[in-house]
Length: 224
Image 1 (cartoon, rainbow, N blue to C red):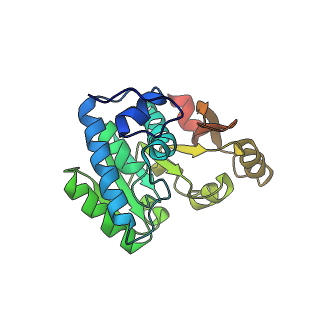
Image 2: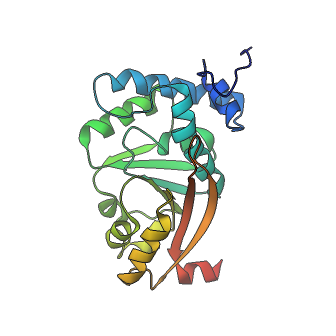
């Protein structure tokens, strides 16, 4: 059993780090996430995948975002856009074994690493090396998830012809999200879209908040 730790002490395990943040994850998934994290850190010695190399930072930045976005996904096919080292895509696949997650990244060395991680963790995932727009020309998803891949203006331009295949875009954003919405509005990129705040939560050790924007065609929201 893990010994209790104060909020000021570095966590000795992922469980301690998640307990500090009141992140409730079943033990089997928590152990699998810890295994993923160790794989990530080991690979990070050879290829730059993450700056979050202690349990507390990993939990506060990566697990927290993934945990919140995973709760918003209802069912079906999920596309993680710009997966990088696997956050949030691999974490969502672990947290939500009832949905099917696909990861896409344009960098070949990163998709190779993602395949290694998925095989080591026995995750049933599709992984593609290409731009998300190319994938969305041929495949349709219920949810797309994105973190740190570009501004709302950029994403709206990327997906302007693909919103039917995007389904609902869950975009994890920081405290400047209102500026991003205003910029996209000024450029008339949101005219056919419905944008709402699906989740808002504190960014640990800061005075800021993270939000998850839920974006889809306005006509799709009316049907639901």
